[in-house]
Image (tube, rainbow, N blue to C red; front, top):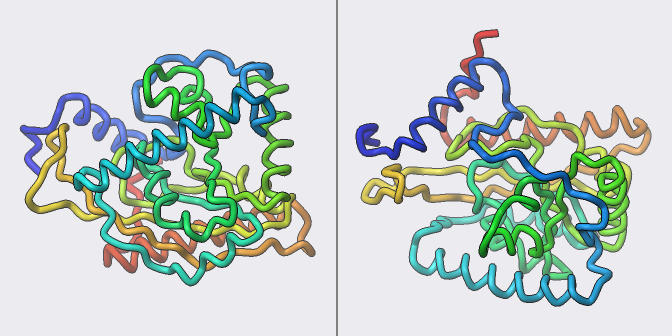
Length: 281
């Protein structure tokens, strides 16, 4: 990569990622997003009970699918392969799916590779509040209507969110979460996981299906930021099942630890290097 050709915006983000890694701030956002308006309970229909929400969802899924399939066809979003498809049977009655978060498009990589195994053909995605309330245009429309489950700083909205998650899981839907939380652009390492999504899986007694996306630089092409185009491989790791004898706290912690360990092992296997964080704390 030629640092001189990299956009100033991405240079700042890569510098911030280095700073955050040094300080152990693994769950903080590095993108310079504006403050997010608070998402109030009446501004989100988590279970698509309203006719208007159902119609918007159908349109958004159609438009989003065509948009991302177009990127794949044009070789802008590159998926080199999928490993571990034998584990997709864990989705037959609903699951929490986890993924590392390094791109606005990584959720579609996961969906594209597992969609045939989803009995209801939808994958719900947990997203940050600002992605739901802040974005204009096409991406804002997709963020609000493509089977997204926004988090919120509002307590009442979060109660509705948690209730909707349990309803969806118990009716056999699968939900994608990012246990690392904030997106770190093109960051290849798995970051420490937060426990929230694993509590959801434990409470609903559904499996966790960890996935991990690895990346390789395309030797011949750079993107609009001057950074090598990334070639992606989705690794579907063995499913993890709640141990109901442990209780929610310990059971969720075990799911969280085991999922992280699986991603760490896959990182070290693919990249042939130990996972080391350059923290200075």
